[in-house]
Image (cartoon, rainbow, N blue to C red; front, side, top):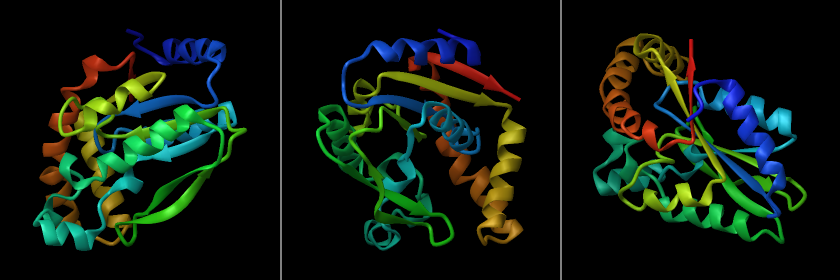
Length: 204
């Protein structure tokens, strides 16, 4: 298991030997760890596309119907089947693959916001539950060519989350409650999946 960016980059070099249409890299980690930042950097380096798991959130209205709105971000608040289908389509290749994006200000998915063209060789998937082994998520990891788990000191991660929630419209009180409540419960579950990653990247 690699313990730094060197191991991750070496793994990406090895992907060049794969003959499939898209080489799919999974970036996992708890909320606020820096997944989006790393995914964007890798996609730029590889001239690839970022596929965020956030686009597969169930719509808030559906979460209200299910009684799960206050747990948005938990494993059972996503369209896991839809996520698996998109990853499976990337494996098959042969045409443009469409995937939803996510509007953070409105906290809802945006249908077909991401178009992954056949000529795109690398797709960087980032999300919390890529390595979870229950609730249908166990179907995700086998569809990824290499996986990286990001670790970040808890206090820094929580501070980032609070700042993010405030930036997207929550009051400071609500931001702290969500970051230290819902987000942190999810983080504990996610951190337990780190051992399943091909590489663990510890960041400051």
